Image (cartoon, rainbow, N blue to C red):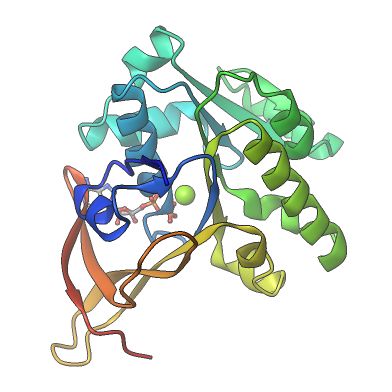
Length: 239
Ligand SMILES: Nc1ncnc2c1ncn2[C@@H]1O[C@H](COP(=O)(O)OP(=O)(O)O)[C@@H](O)[C@H]1O
Ligand SMILES: [Mg+2]
């Protein structure tokens, strides 16, 4: 299976070279777990490798994403300038959100459409898509509608051959009973918890599922440094 590098070297090693090409991977975690930075690594690496990328942001402004990326030495601006990367703020079609967006006066184009429509309209030459955070779409839908929508978005992106990170906050993930995990080709969980031996809180990365990939069921410890996410040596899985 062809792989697309994740932008995090040690993670590429764990995933036999990277994310399975043309598939959608779910990334979940609590606020502050590192999800957005995780997505930035992927976009930056894909841009460096000449891939065409779209970042669909439902929470942060594109400017915030550029600033965060820049602070980690992952400067995305040149790729925005040469149009290899588009960062779009996609809002739900609810009028409140739209009004709020115009009041806040985002400097970037704000797309008032739903995510499925946007996925279907992506140009065929897009290689990589990051959606951050797909959880906002869970809030207005019942479980059945949510599952159907996630499946349809997945299908649309897979048809176009996009390698996709679907980032979802833990609250929305739990609210929808973890259904997104069934739809996705793979699942990566970011979390923080106390190391039982040292009492120190640490960041962990867990890969419970990655189809087509030989996986070790070990948690990886990672840090977020001034250069972004750095994975440590693996540790035995607890729980
Ligand atoms: N330069 C940095 N050095 C160390 N930690 C950082 C740095 N930049 C961001 N962080 C950490 O990353 C966390 C945010 O990561 P983020 O990807 O935005 O989380 P999420 O999207 O899961 O809410 C912050 O809470 C902060 O602790
Ligand atoms: Mg985030």
